[in-house]
Length: 354
Ligand SMILES: Cc1cc2nc3c(=O)[nH]c(=O)nc-3n(C[C@H](O)[C@H](O)[C@H](O)COP(=O)(O)OP(=O)(O)OC[C@H]3O[C@@H](n4cnc5c(N)ncnc54)[C@H](O)[C@@H]3O)c2cc1C
Image (cartoon, rainbow, N blue to C red; front, side, top):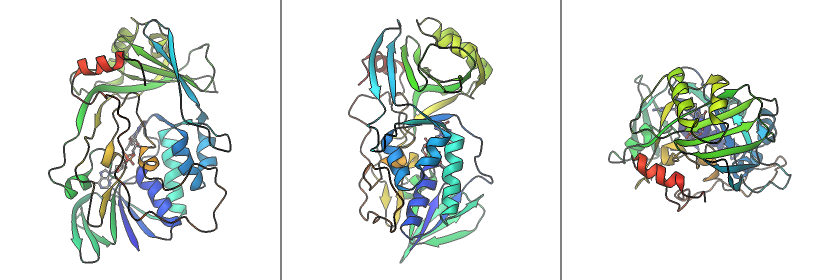
């Protein structure tokens, strides 16, 4: 069997490793002409995502590159601790959720994908898709084509595969939130690895003390328009926004040695069609999550994982690959800030975390 994967991001790389373990021939086509080494901020991997990495024997590499972040303390705008959230039941080996730079996670997964024998071809932007008698034929923006038994569309939020599968697929939606984050050189009186999430008057802020002493943070303030300010402009704006709260947010932002380029957050409405013929969508292409607090980068693999949560020892034979994937379940039944409305977001943010 020959699988074609569009997109060598997080979902594409993990899927390639899993398919190779099932003995399937895999070629991954990535639109960019170079890899995304060094790009991106950081993300947290709950234990259900780590369980999948464990089954793929990638857990030691990922945990070594990240740091343990087992849970979240939640604060209101007055600094009162209003709840605690676990980042998932520890794995049987005791491993808890970890936080890692996206670039480090990506490098590990991309290297694993190539080490597993998948071909990764850069500079191949998927542009067309047709069903054939025995599978699929895809075309790329450079005019070349490829054929396979299946196509897995792992081409992210702005997926081309999604539109090729269903030209009437709903468009991505601005969530009303501008995301950014950074690394700060400041002393905080926190336990390393415990995330501190503050529902501030003007937006959500989260920080965590890295074992090295640096403070990693992200902010998700609402904004009516999907603007793309510069990091310097946004830093000043953020300090003003968060200084009204009884929290260390403004001081942390001011002490930042790096502020990530801000970007508007989008999500994908529930898709009526996420597979057709021998083509299927995974990851952000199928279900990009709304940001706070359900930002869930391991979503692409945790919703598809056919394996239980274990701390795997290497297998002698691969587990069976599921032949009837189920549609992704919604993140929760809780209201989410999906509407393009600051008021909706604010009302949601003001309600107690679930
Ligand atoms: C460069 C980058 C940096 C990121 N940084 C962060 C971060 O710091 N924190 C965070 O929480 N999330 C980050 N994300 C998003 C996060 O990786 C995803 O939300 C999540 O992991 C889902 O992964 P995915 O593989 O579905 O999508 P993505 O990780 O977005 O990967 C999609 C891949 O498909 C490729 N692609 C797009 N269109 C085509 C096409 N037509 N043909 C072929 N390939 C195509 C893209 O170049 C990309 O490599 C980042 C994404 C990218 C691409």
